Image 1 (cartoon, rainbow, N blue to C red):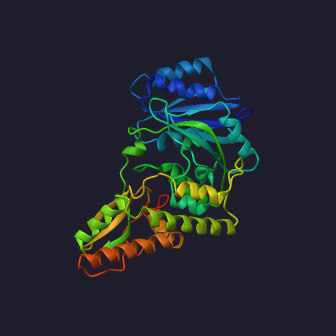
Image 2: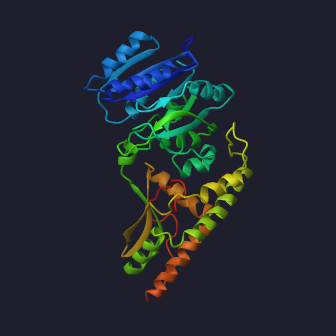
Image 3: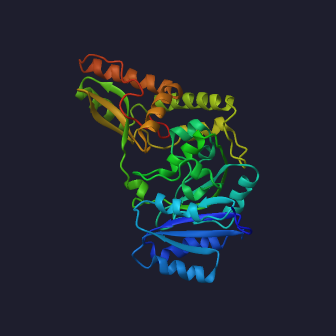
Length: 371
């Protein structure tokens, strides 16, 4: 049961953050919405973090400290927070992120209007506080297929109705991206996100964060070649940008068609505060300056050589689902890659091959896989 006077329970897992945790706590205390509780869950901290949390709790009774035995993963503290939560809604805040004063107002506006899951926009900052990347409006669109293919919505941006996480199996441990895993399970249960573009969260993007250190447990073979020299040549050409122009054109056509199909399904969610043109936004993102093919690697594949992408999803079944979907949403890009593979093998005097069928190996999906 929710407690009267608590609309939203904020769950903040922490480990050895020391005094810096007060910046995160203060960003909650500064919210324009007042009827919240903040559950700071210590994952067995062995520094002075808990002392700093207690100081904040002494100043504001809405701040509560809870300690669990060291789990080494934020899912443990988040599940403990869910068990303690007394609010009608749940929001998450990582210990190195901060909310802007209207975050809860915006998030609760979506949830109280009927959304089961809600996500706001974000500003990405480095450790010095400088903004490192703009937030594209396209990243606030949502559909079950988009949720399957890419890690959307960091925890500090998300809120949901009480009980949904537990019904989906709770937070799971793993190499990383446990948020992607949970949101996908919620989507599989039939729950949909509602979103806004407005940035209400300042989120840390730094080489020392766990996401940047995590292993890439799955690979998606995109094309397989018989000849090692030909495979190295093709991979080098792709990384050097020699085929960027045709790939951007193919990606643009594929994405326009895919978003049209998702819109026809009736499940494509447009950010509620954005009135721009979807096709123009797709073109702006695809034809931008982002470097292509940064995640491609060359790996042995049953005596042959696969050009594959290292991908991030946690579960093998998730990887296989994404691989099955890929040919239908990127047909032009996959066809272009196979044509290039056949051409470079023919030039090397090797037997041309048709390339890999998407779904071979143990792949995972994330965003636009050919990138």
